[in-house]
Length: 200
Image (tube, rainbow, N blue to C red; front, side, top):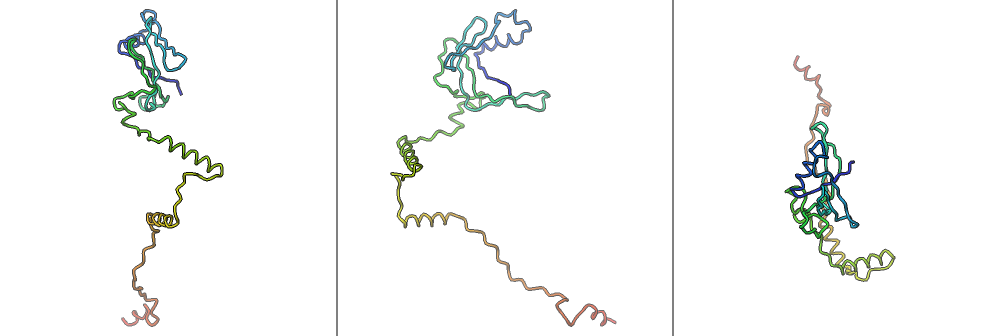
């Protein structure tokens, strides 16, 4: 697979990049070079075009984006999975305080994390730590301290409730009483040849 990334830039920078890429002779342009440098944290950096410097941030996308390439305009070949985007800002804009982009790349993925994905459950940390301790004790061969023991009558009631929820096994359908059909083979005194003799 190829290495690919998505870079989102302000409109005026996009025009300059497009002009730079479309020109045959790049040395005639005032924007002679493109450069992208990241700091030690790997999330913030600087995008350089010509002599101008723009702040940039690496953001995680809310969903993985697949990119495709075509050679004949009929069949598509997958070339990469893209999970991050480089966001270039104007010099005066504030840096994002999160590492995940709130929106996806297309309008249907706007505010995707809130609208399309399930929220993480609100767990009580005290309950989680208590259950974790009990599991470690059980694994070590001990017994759990916070175990609710049911009496035998309650256990029987639960077993009855479980068995009531189960579907009964399918029984074969009973056959209706059908009278046996009689054939000529069952009659000893009559045969096909006898009928032919009477007609003579």
